[in-house]
Image (cartoon, rainbow, N blue to C red):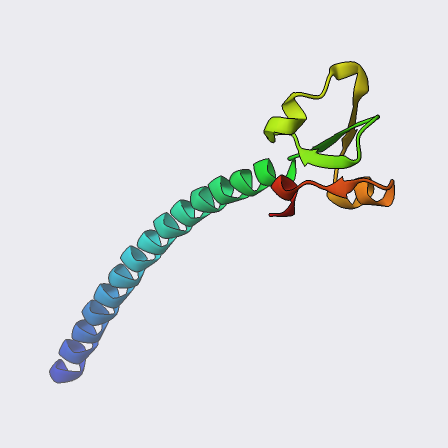
Length: 102
């Protein structure tokens, strides 16, 4: 009976060590998940900035440009037409400027 008691105590100690080790691994994984979530937010924010890039054209012109294009910056405010996407501008008959092809 004494051997059974010793084996039981040893088994519980080993189980406790395993549980402690698993707990540490879970804490590490939670920390990694937190870091991945932060990185995911940064990547999404960067992607959203690219998605929000609008396109502009002149009412009297034939081409649609990205807002950041040098030609777009020369369009006067009273002649400027803005589009959320290139396809909307093309649907209205505008030709895509090489700056907006990429």
